[in-house]
Length: 136
Image 1 (cartoon, helix red, strand yellow):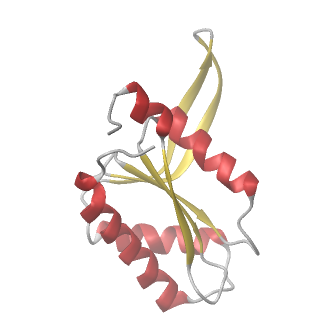
Image 2 (tube, helix red, strand yellow; image 1 turned 180 degrees about the vertical axis):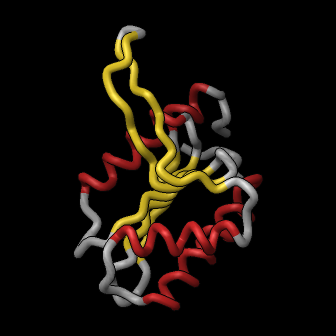
């Protein structure tokens, strides 16, 4: 599905640039919390609104049944899920897709800092894109 994401290009590029700066300065081999904190510092240099460990309530039939915590939310438009794992897998993909759905954020970046080269993948919230009729 295609959608007009042109208003997100600069935002995404700045976030990705911050991810590369953190990876270049720290390198692989540290715990996820180290990358999370360093990325927050770098993002705050570029953005006014960077929320860390933002909490969303999960409802079923209008009853709160749990909470979901997102690593980083930038300008209420993009979420970043930080990992420091051997390989990203389908569980990580499912996690970020669930995070997009519960938050109604349109774009998520799943990043893995544990490799020699930074690895990341963008995911779009097609549930919300379709609901808002943003598809082309």
